[in-house]
Image (tube, rainbow, N blue to C red; front, side, top):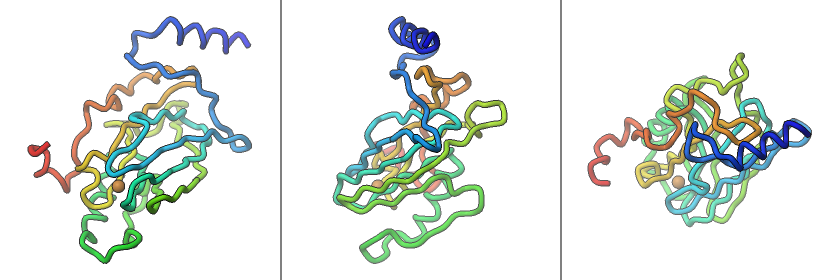
Length: 193
Ligand SMILES: [Cu+2]
């Protein structure tokens, strides 16, 4: 109870560690996972930032409100780059569900492919480092869509690792969204935006 009261005060008082402090989060557990809703449209994600608590168990609920097939790939940039390259290789294939593609071991991240009008729920435990903080955050984590061309259209939002109080964890400034870079496959398109 004391912890809860303190957390509320922190939220009310604001915090100079960053401009955005989200409401207190009750981290999900294996028996009571927290719902993380992500809506994919043509061609953007909502919400603009996805908050996750390292080590918590969530149910990622991906809703495709667009007309195209979309996906959420959750992971750091090496994972985003791997899927961008893998899916670019099958661009121009026949319409329908995204072609079967794969990436190397350790680069899978969490990938959920959702057809237009569909919703998929996937249980997932957010990786945690031995120190208790987020795992492998160099360069930040993102939620991205790598159906060919979609990332370049803007289908990427940053993951913000937060504590149960909603305060962003330290060392995570890279996930602020202003350090987004284009996956290697789309380097030529940056100037057109
Ligand atoms: Cu997409």
